[in-house]
Image (cartoon, rainbow, N blue to C red):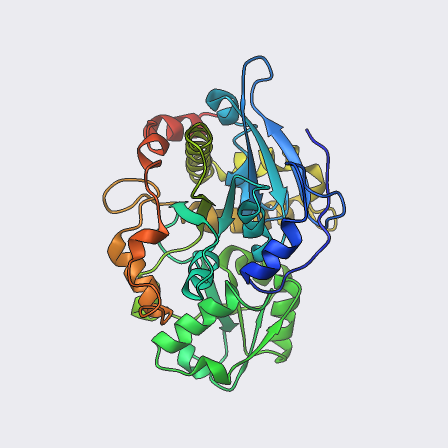
Length: 376
């Protein structure tokens, strides 16, 4: 498998200037070895010509929720597609993740739409376009204790809310929910907390009133810490929006675009595989990244936690109402812009996305993939 590399700098917001300052200092296609993230090459067949692509993700290598990103190697999908894939992992650093693509150090990044939309609304065109999302609904959520009196986002006014990092995407997601519910997000005290488990401990102790995060991470953290939580309901505008997806540079050439489409096709197939056979997906993920398997708990508990996290993500993989994987309608993009109060700054949402790869991504037999997973 591959060399592990590390990334050193931390960016706390999605400001383009900071992103470019760090990454344009690099040269070539290698990630600096002075970093805190990690990079691993997962290849297809070594016996035929391959197209190489680099994927940037905020998931730690081996995290169950990130399984669809890399398990295509073990399942043979990368080999079928003739791909050599390098996964660059930057856990908890969404701005740096998308920054690698901005700087030309990665071909695509897995990102919330906020990291694309908010800089553009501020007049900073990062040269990126949205190309695909496996989700048709938000995968972020706002958690409170099960016994909390808080029942809607607007009731978080004048409260303390924890999140993994400030700025986009967590803070902007919180603001969109509170505003759409008729509240004033500027009254909220937002604090950065290092992990989901630490956040739920703080929630249990009453140090924070709510926690914003990925629903898969929150479900796992709740299981680990024994904290009973519930998710606040989405206001209509937020509930009709969507979740994370992939971005690439607008100037990506045709050959690379074709390779990216084939990679994304393997991601969808892996998500479908995990829906049908979560036990095997967890097992194969641990075989691929043995260090990610917990050693401080029983096998039964470790499997239970991994299946909870993977299940939230995999079961959120859905095709659009038109039957196409990855499609988000213009109307839904418009609602996303409206829910974030950006209508006056972004009048033409069609400039945000490029769906030219969807036909190639969708050229596979879904039932054959499901059958393979059931019989694996």
